[in-house]
Length: 635
Image (cartoon, rainbow, N blue to C red; front, side, top):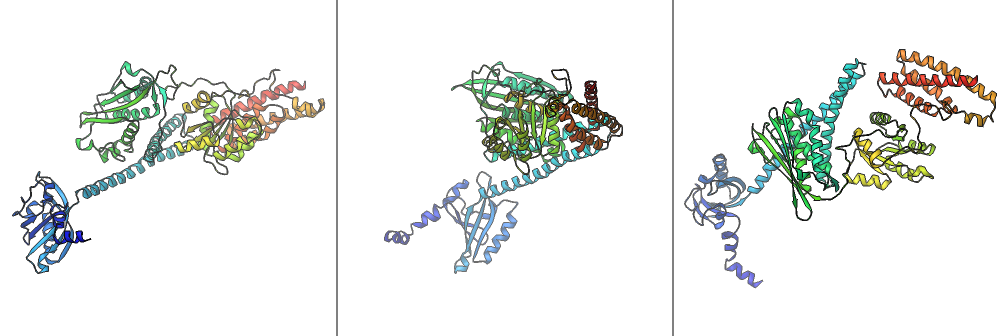
C-alpha cells in the first residue's frame, strides 16, 4: 500500500493515464485553439506536439463542423459536458469518429479553456452503420419474399378456381401448366429459406458418396438447354477430361451450387453467350480439386456491389428483385455451401459487360468402379406391377398426387389419413411398403411406425418410408429412430419416389396381383371357393347368390351409364359402394379395389371429370363382363 501511495504522490500515474493513454487529450481555449495534446495523436498520423497552435475546428469534417460549433459553445457554458460526437481529420485526409467529455476550467476558477477527453468510436459507428444497412437489407428482403410467396400462391389459387369451372381441354392444360410453374417457383423459395435456416443453425450435414463430377455437370447443363435456346443464347460447355473421374463428396450440394450459378447467368443474360468450364487437379493426400467457372455476357454487377452480393438478403440492386424475382439468398447459400466443404466462390464482373463466377471445392479421390445412380441421371424403368402400397397422408392434394404416381406404375394402393387407421389396415392385410406422412392428427408418423414395429407376425417388418417436409439431419434421425427405413423430402418428384421405392429399397410385389380384373388360372373373373365353403357346396344357394348378383350388376351398369351422361359423380360413387360387398363375396377382389377407388374419387372429386368418366366406364364394363361370365356359370 505504501508503494502505491508513493507512486501517486510522485504523479507517475500522469504519464501512464494522460500522456500514454489511449484517449486523445486536448486542452483548447474558448475559440478552439489547441494549447496541448498528448501523444495519442500518433494514432491519427500526427507527431507529438504537432497540433499545438492549430485550431480544432479546422480538423472537423466540413459536413458536421456547424453542429460541432454549437455543441462546443454549449460546453463553454457548462462545467462539464459529455458524449459530443465529431469526425476528426487524420493526416492521410481520412476521418475517424470521436466523442469527447469536456471539463470547463473557468468553472474551476481557472482560465478560459476546456479539457477535451476524446475517445475513438470509429468502430462503433461503423458497426452501427453496418447494422443499419443489414437491417434495411433484411426489411427489403422480407418485403421481397412476401411478394415472391404471394405471387405463386395467387397464381395457384386463381388457376384452381378456373379449373373448377370445367374449361375446355386446351385451357385446362394451360391452367395446369401455370399451376405447375407457380408451384416450382414456390418450391425454390421455400428450399432457399430451409437451406439458410439449416446453415445458420449449424445443422447442415454433407454426404460422402462416390459420384462423377463430369457426368453431373453434363447432365445439369442439359436441363438448361431449353431455357437457353428460348432466350436465343449460345451455350458453351467445356469439361476437361481430368474431371471425368470418381470422387467422394456430396453431389446434391454441388448440383445446388452450380444450378444457382447457371440459372443466374441465364436470368441476367439477354444476348450473347454462357460458358461453363470445368477443370480438375490432383492434390496430395488423395485430394482432387474441382474448379468450375460460369461466365456470361449479361448485365454485370457494379463494382461497389461486388462485396455484398454474397450476403444473405442482398442483391446487387433492390430493383433486381422487382425485375427478375428471387429471394436474394441464392448466392449467399452457394458461397456458404462451398465454404462448408472447404471450398470458395469468387466473382469478376463488369457492369453491362458480363460476370464470371468461379467455384472451387476439394473432394476425396476414390477408385470406385461402380458409379452411383442418383437423381441427376435417373431413368425410371417400368417396375413390376402389383406392388401393394399403403399411402398414409392427411392432405388431400398430396394424397392425390402420390396416388397418381403409384397408379402409373400399376401399384395397388390403399390410403389412410392418420396413424390409427394405418395400424388397423396393416393388421387386416399385408403391404409391400408404407408411405408414411410424419405430421398427422390423432397419431403422427413416428408413433404409428413404432406401433407397427410392435405388431405380431411379418407385418411388423413392412418397409416404412417417411414423407416429410423437415429434411434436416435432426428430423431424419428421428425417423430412423422410430423404425423407418427411408425418407422422401416433400415436395418430391416422380423420379424421387421411383428412386426410393425401386432403387434404394429394391421393392417388388410379395403378393403379386394385377391392378385390373383378369381371368384366374381357371380362366374366370371370379372365385366361388369362399361361397362354396360356407354353403357346404350347396348348389341351390350358389345359384340364388349368383342370380341375384347378375340382376343387381345389370341394374348397376345401367344406372352407372346414366350417371356418366349426367356427370352425377356422387351417385356413381354410391353405386360403386353398393356393389362392393358383393364383389368381395364372389372373389372379385381386384374389381372390389377398383370400386373402392372409384367411390373415393367420386366422393371427394379427387380427379377431373374426364378421369372420373374414364374410371367409371372401365369399372362398369368390367363389371358387366364378370356378370356375363357368371350368367354362363348358371347355365
